[in-house]
Image (tube, rainbow, N blue to C red; front, side, top):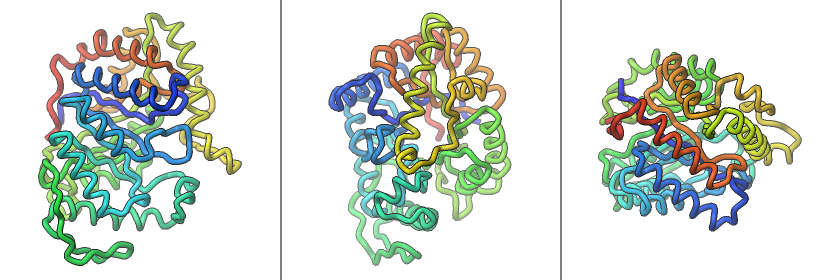
Length: 352
């Protein structure tokens, strides 16, 4: 099992702090500098389109900027939505990012869960898994080889020369986001690092399924992380820390409503809803999917989550909903000075 490490998950919501878009990007880059200085292991950026939930529809553009503002922080996606890319083009972009960051890139992959985002790009929802599977094969071949030949159900390449190669060989680590038993099995079968989300009960079960299936996947042709001794098992949680519990709960309740509205924004235009998140803050809290309170209370909640789920990677979201840049910074400062040292005495080494 890996030593415990902390990471950050981010959507870059449009309404975070009500900043202009240039201000939002600059504020977030300054926050990443703080993550880097504090010893956070990795930063994982989501990809969304046509919604205020995500202002980084091209994650590699923002991650390239992030590479210039950080020195040790590992940079990747949760996730690249593979049906939105030409996989050969993505191979080249990942190789560029890994070189620009001096070998700090991580690769999160997924098929996409929003039929509306897929429809905008004329991708049929029920075709997304076939596209994902074939694209993933291309990406693994393209990153590791000198020439690319592939004949799959979706993509075909004939002896294409690969001019760009990542610093990390054969390629950066692969990651997968899981919430169901099926997605946990998929991550385990490919020995991908996994980050689970949802209520504590869902996370516990997904992690159990992942570990049950992981032991049979090492050194198989499906193993996407052959150079990694033990893949990381993580979970992601919103967090807000304030000087006292009452203040933290009040601010987090308001921020959650804005986050929920952002999650639902595109779905509501088609008279439907996302079922992964409850509409009420209290239900989200009850499911222990968020850490809120004073530093002492949040420290205890993090410890309980680690103990009950067995995760070795705690991935936290500090800037979300309508939190201002100052509020997100204060929350992270409390975490970095009052909580993180209780778990990690020195910045964690990479899980390799």
